[in-house]
Length: 320
Length: 279
Image 1 (spheres, rainbow over the protein chains, first blue to last red):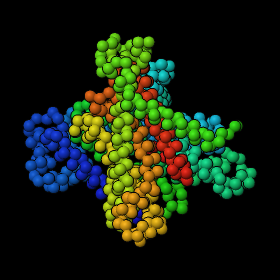
Image 2 (tube, each protein chain N blue to C red):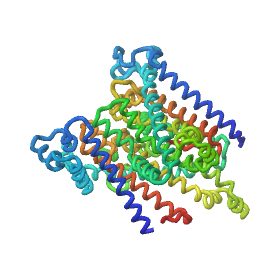
Image 3 (cartoon, chains in turn blue, yellow):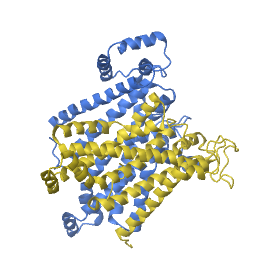
């Protein structure tokens, strides 16, 4: 296991270098002075001179690439002239809010998806199954930002049940229990928006996986032992469906992150999405490049975690 | 509970998918001329709710939403279909060469595929749109460059089993060149898979284009559903029709192509009958 981990981490290095090299190529291929892109718009001449020296922009391209690699690998993603802070700090500040949104959506959609998938599989080709199938198909066709708009229209603006946006109420809420309830109320719509696509995917994979598994002989044995259908599905069938579910969750991490970004913009959630939106409107290039690198890195990590989850879930999978 | 025959249900979804796709394609071709008004013309009262004069209302600049929804189909469909086509050709080439020749070529191409696959396409597209300026052609190429790995991997795994077949040996014995065998005799067997993957990618590409336009990074000289949704966001609470109708058009189009892909996969690939939802 340790050896496997080390090997996988080593394999991730060229991927990371490749992504960094890609941003380097983009910066140099883009129209305009690279120093404006690396340093951001809005600096003065002295600042640009410093940036030119720092990235060695007067030196040959290969040397520039080495310098660029060096600073990126040190976590130095540059300075955001718009935010007037190092890019790394700006991003680090926003990660907790995004992580809270993503993890909650992932947890809710996984649990609900396994349940709905099991319901559909046990009633395959009946009206409830078809209803669930249609819902998952529509869910997969729906852009997160539009679903968010519709949910706001119905539940926040229309019925007034839930807050329209933000992570906490503007007016002071007593800390402790009330604050927690306040946070949950603010979470409901963003989580529903972000989780719906995941829910659709997980439900579909679970349903199809279960339908295959339910014909296996060990399932018949479990029934023969006198177990109830619910127990058979939960204890024996569902476990075998977890691997494809983990695969789909792992391989769609990039999609989840994209969804989170769009959801945050709809709900003014104070995470990376809002930051990305502001960075695009103000053309904050250092910040945009760093966000791209962070997103790539998180996909690499998600893939690694997916592989590790395999061993935990299925003892037959030996990672070497 | 009454059970429907799976085949009956499948043909129902196939017909719905085909109908939705045909309507979307029809709108993409004729939508602009069917529209009652110029979708960019700002000559009506602003923010009118749906009425007999303006079926789907008007936006903040007094533009007719119905005309926008009709004319907006073209950009979405064009990006979707062009992306899927370019990615399909590219992915097929890479996957076929890697799978058929194997060895170092395979290793090198697969490492490249892995690299491209981890690049989060939405974030890359934002960066590129910000650096180079938004353009529909550019965006399509960029999306195609991020969509091909899925096709490449699927085609490669298919080719790996196909190249072991006896008819490949027979073709070689007759004296055909390797390239000719690959292009004329092996790849056609993977065509079903390639087309199903491409059909799924149409929907996925449409969604990415819409998301970018929603962020204001779309091509602003072309009317598209994403562009309309971007304009709708500030008026969400006063003008629901600005958001609901373009979004509905988007959902129905993507649903249509996804259902069609699902139906096609049942025809070409009965063993694996269930297509993955999103490419």
